Length: 178
Ligand SMILES: Cc1cc2nc3c(=O)[nH]c(=O)nc-3n(C[C@H](O)[C@H](O)[C@H](O)COP(=O)(O)O)c2cc1C
Image (cartoon, rainbow, N blue to C red; front, side, top):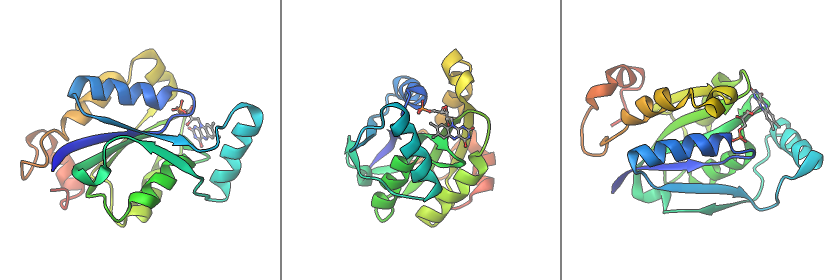
C-alpha cells in the first residue's frame, strides 16, 4: 500500500492550486473529482447552492489512482454554504467503504469549515486525521503554501511509522490515526 493520495475538487481553481502545490512538493499523486454536468455561469453557481442546501450527491467523474490503494487520502476542496462542496461529498460517499484514513484541506471565503469537518466525520464514520482550512485570498496570494506544506509534511510516511514525529499534536487529536 502506498502512502498518500491527494484528491481535489475545484470549481474556480483555488483548491486545485493548493493541491498542486502540495503534490509538487511532496511528489504525491493527484486524483481529480470533476462534475459530470459542468457548473458554468450563474445557473451553475445556483446549482452549487441548491446541491449544498439539499445535501445532494451530484454525479461526478474521478480521474486518478485507485483511492483504496493508499493509506491516507488528503482531500482538498472548497466550502459551499458551510457544507463540503457537493462533488467531493459524492466522492466520499462512493469511497466511504474503501478509504483508510482521511485528511482534509479546505479553501473558503471566510468561514464554515468546522461544519464541513463534522460533515466529513459523519460521512466516513470517524474524524479526519488532520484538518485545516485556508482563505481563498491567502491561497491565491501564495500565503497558504507554507502552512499547507507543513501540514502535509506531517502526513509523510504514516503508512510506515506508528506515530509521525512531526505530528504529536495531531495524534493527540485523533489517537486512532495509525
Ligand atoms: C456556491 C458557493 C458557496 C460558497 N459558500 C461558502 C461558505 O459557506 N463559506 C465560505 O467561507 N466560502 C464560501 N464560498 C467560497 C469558496 O469556498 C471559496 O471561494 C473557495 O476557495 C473556492 O474554491 P475553488 O476555487 O477551488 O472552487 C462559496 C463559494 C461558492 C461558489
